[in-house]
Length: 265
Image 1 (cartoon, helix red, strand yellow):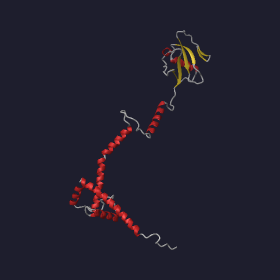
Image 2 (cartoon, rainbow, N blue to C red; image 1 turned 60 degrees about the vertical axis):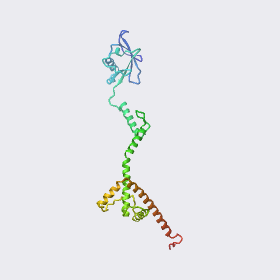
Image 3 (spheres, rainbow, N blue to C red; image 1 turned 90 degrees about the vertical axis):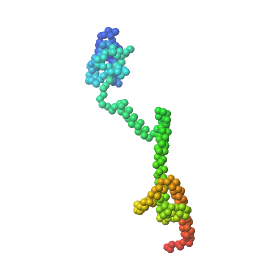
């Protein structure tokens, strides 16, 4: 006998040994479970047919599963899923489309994690060997810095060569004494030039071949480069002292503020 809260939905005469106690959970929240005594040979298709008769028009998209979520196929009978004390069956509705489920949630969470990872530091993390990622990155930067050391040194040497060549051009000879440095400083100050500027302007005339070869041999000499650095430092000091002397002379020649005539209104 099928019963729902005391209402009879149908009658079935079966032997006690062949009956199965079924607890049918409906997808409607307003109705509780339906307790049935059904034949063990009854298939899922037979149960669906009875549901269609009880709820006309509502069972076209229903399907049956066990309580654990396993599909109760139409060809399966109750004896295949029989449990004690009750064989629990659920009615589910197949929905078309929708906003998605776990897949959309997983993609959204992955997007948030990737966006957060761009702003978070991973230096405290460790690799499979136990080394911190921050230490590995520092080691890579140090290796790159050491590998580029010859290039930086060559650039500094080339800059010193250009400065010394400009100093020689300004004096017209190789500087040998402090007087030469003072003379070079005054010429640079008068011309408003600096050793930091390019030593080879666009309008410069080409040197003779012999002088160019001799100059190239000197520039390739390491001792010459070291000597040029000392000379450039001396020239800088001389320029600084000359500028201080010139400022002192201007201050001494300037009349005091009290001696200046007042403007006539």
